[in-house]
Length: 181
Image (tube, rainbow, N blue to C red; front, side, top):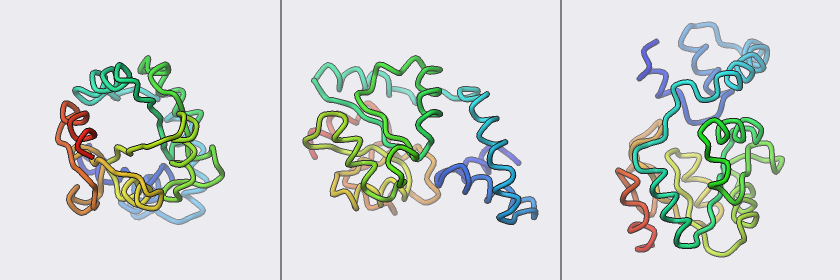
């Protein structure tokens, strides 16, 4: 399957990716998804950063936010252990004040509790959520947090359909956008 087609399967978690990928082959059923899931996670962990690159400008945006005293958090449905592996592989572990994974709170996005927990662990106060999917949009709405959607992420729909408070096309626009919100 070409990379661009696989890209369109991403965005609702590893089980959904596996389910969608297997459906493309005509082999999908829940027993097969559950049986294959541990193998997928093991493979992902062993290859956590193969082909992964930071989006242009993201490191500079994170550094600029930190320099302004902004506390940064990650709220993901990826298991926390895998999130830490990825951060280590990118040499990003020290960039974030809080990390909340899909297994941290006992519930996953779009439930608002993981986002509330990430904000609380980062010190509380006002927050904004940067995301790229309908799950992120639903999470931000449920949590009562502003959403900045990126137009270049892994959404399964046009970014305009997410109902974000703002949309950016590059990370250089993040800080001015946050200032407007």
